[in-house]
Amino acid sequence: RLSKGRGSPGRRSTASMARNQTPAFALVSLSLAAYAHAFSTISGKTAGLVRPRKALSLMPGLRSHSTTQSRVSTRSFPAAARTARPLMMSTPTTTTGVDWNKELLIDSPDNNVTPYISNLVGRDLHLVKGHPLNIIKTKIEDYFCNRDAAFERKDSLNPVVTPEQCFDDLLIPLDHQTRRFSDTYYLDSTRLLRTHTSAHQTELLRAGSTKFLCTGDVYRRDEIDASHYPAFHQMEGVKIMDELTGMTDRDAWVPTCEADLKSHLEGMIDSIFGPVQKRWIEAYFPFTDPSYELEIFFNDEWLEVLGGGIIQQPI
Image 1: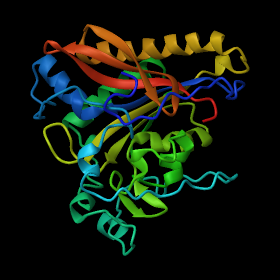
Image 2 (image 1 turned 60 degrees about the horizontal axis):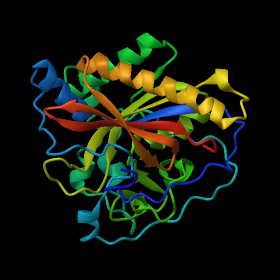
Image 3 (image 1 turned 180 degrees about the vertical axis):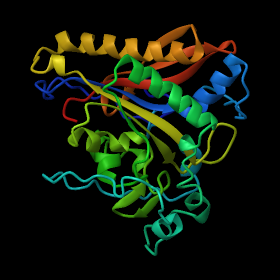
Image 4 (image 1 turned 90 degrees about the horizontal axis):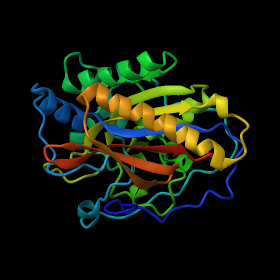
């Protein structure tokens, strides 16, 4: 299960990585649509969503895109320069009032955004009261904020980001398939539509946020079928554990982070679905180590509902 179906590179060792940073964990790429459907089935409510035909891979940027790759150019763009820079937030930080056709359908040889995709941007379904995505988003936010009022809610960040935000800052390898023109919607060589909410992780950390939930629409060049669509919604969660600052023995602080992470996520699952059978699966993601996936037993089969892990200390 370390890389099956995701085109993931081999596991990275962290033995030589910095160990004097503040440990943190991340709940990453929780699919709101999958949650809304599963919740509606378990609770007996109708959310009007199509059931996935198989367990979804919910981790950002690591899902297989073999169908698309066989039909589209595999051109990729280089990494952004790794130089010291001032904080660069996604601007504008709110999508209110943006003319997305004008913003996205620009005259550039590197632009591969279609009018169909442009018309999906800015709908902000996760902010529409009563929409299944908004219902699930609110339930998850309420759980975390009731458990710890310090969690911030971020749900209106601009979906246009840089390759540095989306890939480089998250240690995603230069040859990873998600960087390719066939897999990602580029405005030009320096801007793209985020492929995951993790694209905002480092900018929020630099801005001083230490506990936050970030929700938004994300875009990938997937073929449309029963379980794939080029636009969907994710929720990102990050918590910095200040009480572990200065600890140099990785073997000492990793178990503490792991226990806190799993406690938060298992509690969140129970708050949404009620008591349900769960199991943790070891996984691989470039920006967390160790990494995990959480599955629940749903409709007589195991359904992957989220992924997470301890943030790589260089990040």
